[in-house]
Length: 166
Picture (spheres, rainbow, N blue to C red):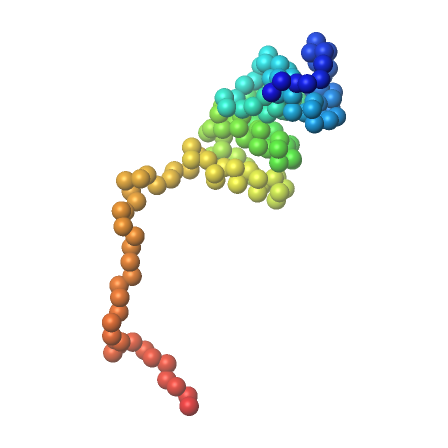
């Protein structure tokens, strides 16, 4: 999409992430300017394949704050502290994409006891959706025809019928 308004692209590199996003949210024309988002996300260090520029900016912002946590970076304890720290649904989804790509084995060790019920629900929903985390039935395991109930044509004499109390 070409942007109809003249914008100085050189200014955006001097803005920090919060100011850049606040500027982009001022009106629809700025927010839907995909070229500006792409230029901002172009040289960021953390990349998740298949992730758009907005999510890439969000991921790098979250990880810049996560580095300041009191755990050793890239350890299971650090990742668990990130999972416990993040509260918003959009942040959880962005961090889930990152963890699914780089720390897939962490989901088996993840401790949800210190999370709120809202956080736990979002994490469980995202984890249960993923086919890489839980095995699904293969196509050859599913029978071709649908199982049918056996038709009963007569009453069995061994069936216990309820007596009428008339």
